[in-house]
Image 1: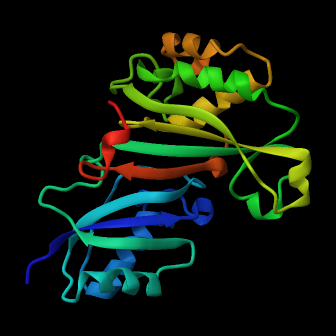
Image 2: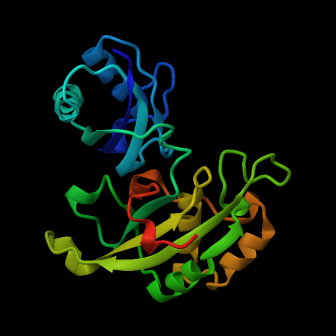
Length: 270
């Protein structure tokens, strides 16, 4: 029996992970999932992930793929994995993938969401999943700034890990088809009456390292009335990471979904 190509749809709480990609001697999403598959199949497994997430970043729509030797019904693989995986990593579905499928290279759309708790202390159950911003933010100004991001732009000013330095040998043009701020209802805690829960939603063909966190960091500066909404356009034009402010912290960020041809892409334009 030969290994078969499988697709894994998964999610995780990134708090205790050192990121998604395998790193020697560190607890990562890829490392934990590969170890679980090796435990079940008795063979070494190498996976690829649709998107890279940093330490502390969460996911509800991550996708992985790889060749697995599995002698039982496909539906049993997800159940077997969840029986041995830790509680902060879950596999929603496992399916046979078509020939040539690659979780990263085959993806056509990725969406991230970032949540801010603005005002009083955040509810206990949200503290691992929001950036607590004290004071007030102008949601209208942040929404206008988000609109500037739509379309195809060079996002070098928002690229981390050395990619945003002028002259860095990396393609930094991306096409953004979704960029908006919404206010979410939060009524399960008394603190909600004195604060606001805001969510930034952004979707693109692909993302650069720390791109979303760097954008949100700039958005909060705008929301705090320290810069006007069109400052985003100035940052895009600058093409230099040093022109933009510090990134937002990781815990508010979630990889929301990844889409592939045939996954219902009609709602997106590239």
